[in-house]
Image (cartoon, rainbow, N blue to C red; front, side, top):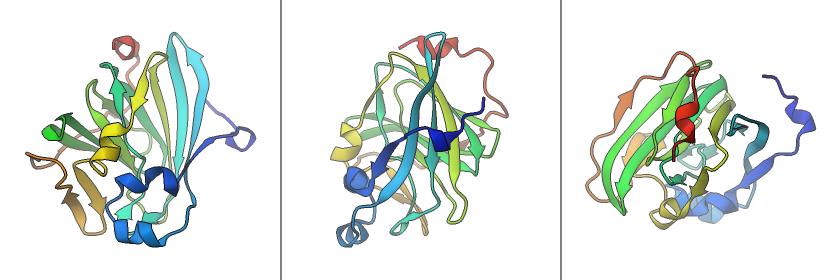
Length: 196
């Protein structure tokens, strides 16, 4: 599926939109607002599913690698992400308030897919300083996002930084992060995404 993104107006996420979820608050406090990443929403709607593309440039957020703001789906909806260009780390956490029940990451290369399970908050990370990341995702037309937990607790329960993974101590009971393998391709049947 090819789209000429130069002819499509994206939703833009700015630094001001994500300051509350960053690890490096010292850097954030000294840095003026600028464009972070680009969301091309609803490029296609098919079979009650929505198709989006996100472009995350290779920039640093101070000591932290570039990432999306992070959100939890309202309801129990899942989502699939496939890497079109670059590499991604999809970070996922299941929480009960500020108590972490599960946390893992999926390191994903071009052509590979990560499935976001229902009930998991998630963040997309571009772990490169020199290669932009482009992803495509599918989700239910009924899926909505809630950013409030990440804003309240200053991001996910781990940050991915130049020094590696660092725990966010605004959470409690943070287990060691584990790594799951990406799928080599997107599932052919996406009907599971419709069940919230």
